[in-house]
Image 1: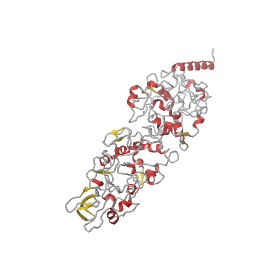
Image 2: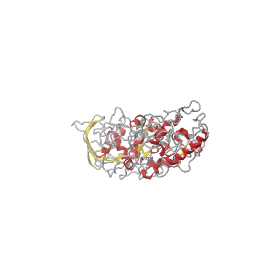
Image 3: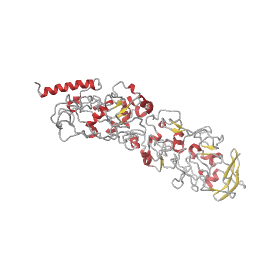
Image 4: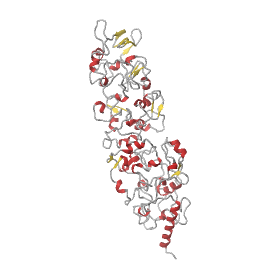
Length: 600
């Protein structure tokens, strides 16, 4: 007759043989004996039995097992789970089943360890430990974990995009016999050679990209950069998983060393289990904080976060929580998030050139000059037009809340319309300007040049302003997010500093010498640019609209706070030829009736 020990040894051998035939094959496997899934008293982890010497019994038994899995011994959880959801997810995720349900019988924390079917009494665990501890206990709320128990077929791949065809999953990443994605697609509970019981090494996110086939990501800085990650938390630096690697794992020593962004891959931003940002499995519950973790001035470039504390900002810190990946591209609730302007999967190094488009904007969606949505912008203005074009929720001009907003005689806050080439005049953002005679232009600008929105709207401490801060319209000390100071109210006085933005492209000397505007009164006195902006202290914006004007040349669109109707009841400017025109209006209480300025 066999002793109890001999019987258990035989049973264990039988279980191991059964496992070979009933579970996916894992070649070159490390032994479960050396992993934390060895819950026997000889196991290497801190969670283990007080006296039980058998290893397999915690999951398998040759007799009195359940039909939930191969000779399954652990009692099943009866929990109802909150499953992962996302506005962009095309898969249908139900309650966990198959292998995932087996994993959760221990890892959801609702069933005590050692509660097995083959014995009437539970296996006693060492100390007071009853369930998995820390991150290994994922609970019943799975909305912050990678979805499981969904059918992954060719139809889903075609519909979702950025997913491989499941027919290509012929390696270590496998679906179950029903074609469903389960925990076992990524984790092998019997083999911890790669750490976290992963089925393969995940350096550079090779495990993630086995299924997530994003062509843009392959060349992205976020997946290729050799920048070391040394100042972020262990959560960011190490692959997230249900279970940490054992001390004997070959990868443990590697994971203790600083990683590069390329080596960390998707884990730079995402966590597969216990993610704080649930809908996209982001490391932080607030999207921008996930970005700030690296864009802090230590890991990557200059710090971005302080830019959003300036006087004039894109309101990322106050509205990003309104962002939804599946939102209406043009008419979503008014907000801005990092992902509205930047595609983190497509962004490349600033050293890479991309036909004049900032590499930080690659792969972002926008609206072209015709008003049509484009999946990937080719011009910077197409991104700006998403919010500052046809959106019905765009901010109206409000001179009370924004001192930089100008109360125009003809107000149009739709920038797509303001810059349309069909207008009489416009700054050359969408197309080159219509005027062939602009004497004040500074080199290298010519009448054949074009500029960008960020030529004017940018960081006041960035390179464009002669500073060392980060590029881009994140925030500025000058409203509305202007790269340089631009006074928009009268009676302050002309100076290089007060009109620094205009003087970035237009020669101050040329403007003050009246090369563009040579008006004289009936007494022969000069009444050109110098008279208006120096003597009368009128701002450039009192006459000129910096974006575009549908009905006037020379960007003439008066500030209604200072320009009112003439005695004839009219406010108008008429162009009468190159550098020629006349005005009928009341300005600074002076009534003008067809007041003319001649050219040379």
